[in-house]
Image (tube, rainbow, N blue to C red; front, top):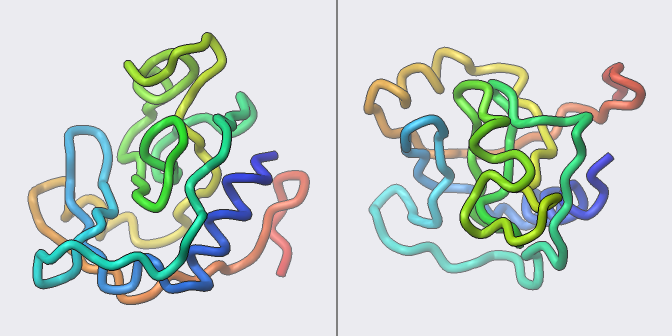
Length: 144
């Protein structure tokens, strides 16, 4: 459904791109910044993983606890939607969306930790210790 975004995401997970990354609340999203737990700008652990083209599927909208890349040609910064943000990040909704079909890529769903994102939304800050891919979805069903 979103092969380019998912491929880049998996490369960044494998390269530990977000280990020791600060998560901060910003309006209607939680952003994985490119700063470490000391507040210093992080060095990239993967290269050439920015998206090469805008990719979006109406079958995977920006719903609560879905993951999107920041910007039209996003990566490595990403965000977690803390509400249905289809109107904020869907096709043609951001200033950097120049074409009607342009949208921030939305490619994954958070399946646990809702309480953590609620705490971050209240102003707490969290640090990513690790990212784990638990399985893949095929036809809406989880497989391992």
